[in-house]
Image 1 (cartoon, rainbow, N blue to C red):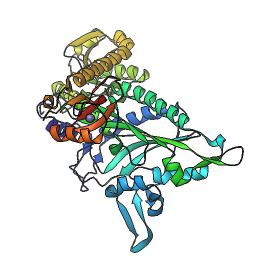
Image 2: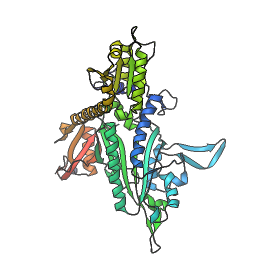
Image 3: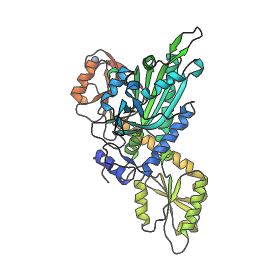
Image 4: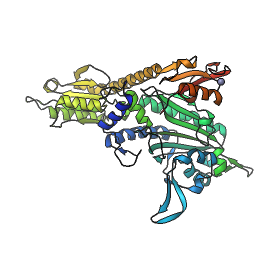
Length: 465
Ligand SMILES: [Zn+2]
């Protein structure tokens, strides 16, 4: 396996390939095949997402993939933002379609004409829906599994509210959902308000969740957007007031994708392979029997497996004849299974198990009952370790710059004071080859802009994916 710190990019491609997450040999560029192991992990991420948004009264929907040209052209900024990324369908069979249709790059233009039919009065608000579907963007840059692709596994939440304040409260609720989700995934992040010239097309403002990859580059793994009435005015989404007049709704959205999986692979993995946070591990516990002539290790292993299953953990026994235990240990370590149990003659005779935790070097032998009682605790400690390591890495990858020379040519997250003006941002970008991620929302420190000396806040600059 490649060395992650030295050759991150090669390490990343190799681990996705050998661990069976995705197959990029499919003949359409940027459209990869989800393999069973990768798809399972993504489904567990989706299920966590569903759990949290459902608990906040969101409802799941499924909209068609095609959007008519007419529907799309309604919001000018939005269309302009996506015009170079659209896949168009112009024919049905051999006939030219009456109206061209685009494959959704995101679903505002699909959903909001329907919102205008659904929202009539105060009683219909707030409207809170989401879907988890594929969206399509004609990506022209170099594609990369789970990071830069043309068919994106996309979560999108859309809301409509009576007032701008209500929509602002929704933005705060998104932060709560995001915090819960990333805690389960053990992912550290920054919240950065994107500069106006880089916000989502049609949004009033955009808050992005950025994390740091082992290469020192930033990866945007989620965004939330305040639309205000920008879309509702164009799509005519209104509700009636008591006096008979109509008011435009205020709207928000929340988007994320399989980039979450990319971050998990990259941030938690090591030179041995993947490390899955327990809550999304397709297999949480692997049992490896060590063949013995004296006792029936398979029967004992099966008994442990059944008892673990009753405790609702995802467990599998690896009884493949063709491989040695040593090969199996390496194989499951590479696939990132959080816990391994080894069962040999000694374990059977003493009602024990030998436990190997993916985040630790030492193995531990304990009584079977003691192990069963403590699985939950062991899983929590794995989560704590992953979260601590990831936070530490993010800290080490971040530099505070007082002058541009401090960060020139670096692959790090740079924190510096910036006045917020595009002119100064351009200068920083040109001299450091970093991109502006906006104003950091986790810090309210003030200082003088690194370029012009005027009052500024903490700006974040980094190379990005
Ligand atoms: Zn400035």
